[in-house]
Image 1 (cartoon, one colour):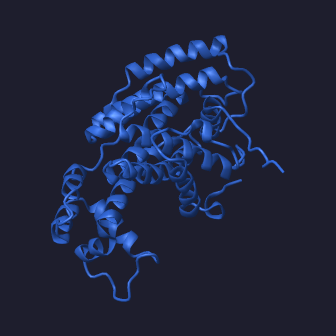
Image 2 (image 1 turned 90 degrees about the vertical axis):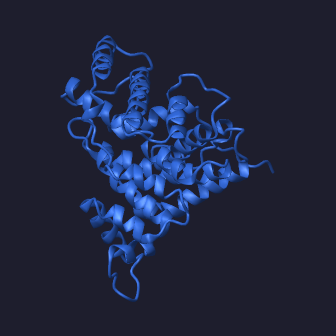
Image 3 (image 1 turned 60 degrees about the horizontal axis):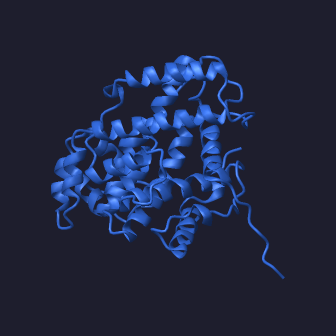
Length: 314
């Protein structure tokens, strides 16, 4: 007997459903923007061109130094503790995480240095960047921002995990890959705040063309934010490629990892929330940069790390 066929969906449709999910919008009624939407887009483009990227929260001042220091596998925990200790909020987050059930040891944690030793370098990297990025992605309010921040963060966690896994297979720095994944939709939050100024009343079913234009503006603002935060050059390049409207076949290694991680995280999240068939066949979207076996493994790892019963919301 022939194997049952899996449903297939175009990449543009997947992206459209993701933005409707983030913005809490109903399904589309049309592809073409209305006259009102075209006028709103012009105002949105004007606002985004004037958008003061400095209005975004700064990353902690010690973070760039920590990232450089953490590239050295032999750096001592006392050196890391001295640098982390300069930011009281970071200290609090490290101590909070290491005091959780997952990390709790037989002996009480005696010091910041002890906590950092317990976390390990990979654990410390993730704690610090999650502590830095989560408030930025969740800082939304108004018509479009009621749950958008939480949903952007859910995607960011999955995208970062998948990007680190795929990036490692391509020889990319694991933490740069993780940071690229977690920051790739940072501009979406800025677009949400701008839309709140232009559409204070609840919106009807917006067209796909309107949402696609919003996504392009968000990608540009994500790139601007990365430059403002002085993120590493490979991340800047990957975000440049993501901003491009052309589906290039010559992506950088990190650009290819980020593109696939974004897709895999999106499909998993939409599947969890009943916005897409969880058995969707993605092979037509898969990049030649990665083997089917690796991409299937990445999907399995995402489901393992972010199980449905803990994350699904009605």
